[in-house]
Length: 231
Image (cartoon, rainbow, N blue to C red; front, side, top):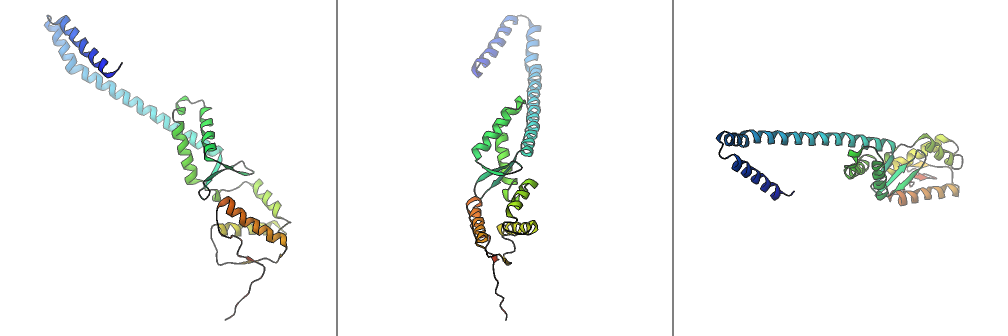
């Protein structure tokens, strides 16, 4: 029923009761007292009860929402890179790019498949919050790969480019510092002048530009000779 219908029904009911008992003073007095004293208190109590129920329900929603968000973030290693506006999902072995629409779909799919019916009402709110958390707190450049990934890279670098894994690790640490623009005044001399290594350096530079969107030559401080100037 709409508001006007309810209002008219209430007025009609009071008029009906009044006309029915208008010749009985005790009943009319009771009706007056009930409407003016008792009914407002009853309605206020019912109103407060509804507000409390809504608050309790919202609290339950919030707790379940937090649980799902933490569960999703724990089980899905998803990172973000603002330079490219891309998301990256890591499966413990490889990093794969992920569009934001695909991330939205993945979140909604897991929400829809949950057994918590009340949580489904908050799926769009939860989705937006998860995306914002990933953007704010999961920078791809600060992600820590698993041992499998690290060893895979080290095995690729040695012995093809570096004699030992320790040298390969040192090289990777330098590349990392260069990406974060650390130690810009340092130069690293490589005795290996093979074209293969030079092509490798060039490939790294192009990968950083195309995939990370950092337009700095991160291998420019690797040199095959260094001239020392004396005063």
